[in-house]
Image 1: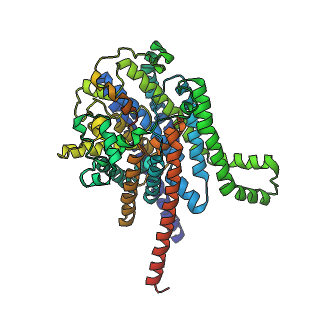
Image 2: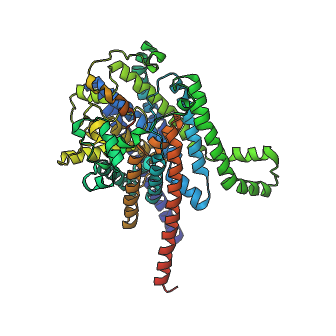
Image 3: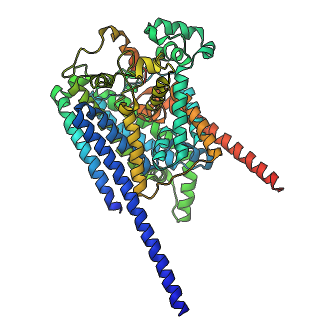
Length: 496
Length: 63
């Protein structure tokens, strides 16, 4: 009798667990469908209201795809470098390099046809220095600019703190003047004045303004095609200059170095245990191929990201032709949102995947609304503007990216609300600060200054990547030192 | 439950298809190379302030 009661109770408990699991799954599915429905409603509703809003919906749907890909591929530059330098595992880094390469392959025909919205950034040592700041920051924060977005979509509140810190730092740094002007070389000030910028920008007041107009803009903005004397919009320029010389060869060499330093030994030991002998060039090539194909998820995500990035350029260019403008500032003005346009009537409208500038913009807009002048600098006042985040095209992309990542995370049971501790919150804020400085010095983050630039043959892309690797190495060393110090302190307090 | 994910992909693909259909024909109309090689966009308006043309090159350098 007792046995029967016990087994009935066990069956009831099992049934209750199954019911709870089913309820949780239904709830999860409803959340995912709700998010999808929200984005669909926004797209359809705004289009019905005014067809110009389709331009913003383009950013939204591509942002959604980016979010899905990032979450699926666990696309994180911070993890890539941390795994490589801390535990000597190159899988994520290799996946990211392959993804960049695939994006380059897809971008080449777009560039050759002259439809690319991409433009190169100035090339100089500033890209390396910026990369160092960014690399340190992303390791300390535990996530890069793009992965912080998708991790926020997974419910990680540390990642949200990183985004907040990164956004705030950029907005404040872009406008810092006064005391900071003492650190500006006289040559930068003179050179900035010679640019003849509008008086409203007040170019002599602001460290970043003088850094940009007095130093960065003086350097050439070149692609590999242009270095080789070929136009970007040509078969030779796009495929030989940008793709072969700018991406395939350096990426192949980088992967070869990673293979020799981090993969070869482990691969040979594994093969030896399996009874296979790795000899000669064919054996090495087999090992190289095994390394490249080790992280299929990241590579697949990279391929889809590449296709999406290229398609976004095509679609955005098409809409610019259809509506007859070259920048979304004109569109916002037409639909009655003229607050926060730059002095040129422009807003940030990259036409491709970008992360950090729209994050700085919403802080800039908030500060402006609070009465803090933010339009007297080059970053906001002259180029990107600070439109209302509700109608900022690039902000639609970032919101949808978080949403897309959340949908995939919900479907894979990877969504979990993670509350930060005081310690993790501190690292998130400090890391976001360093990334914010790096992003503004380098005119972009791991996406805008590395991933997109390398894939489009911009000479500054690999320089930023080099700095980012150096910064990540320093970040890993710092964290190892910090952890050891903390462990020693804890052991001491335990009397060990 | 994962099979429901196809609904997400289908909706996303549907919107993407609409966006493509809406935006690509103008590109075909003016011709790919016309745009890429300095061609003028359809319905190009004169809303850009001519006096600000001097900043065009600077604008390219900044994001």
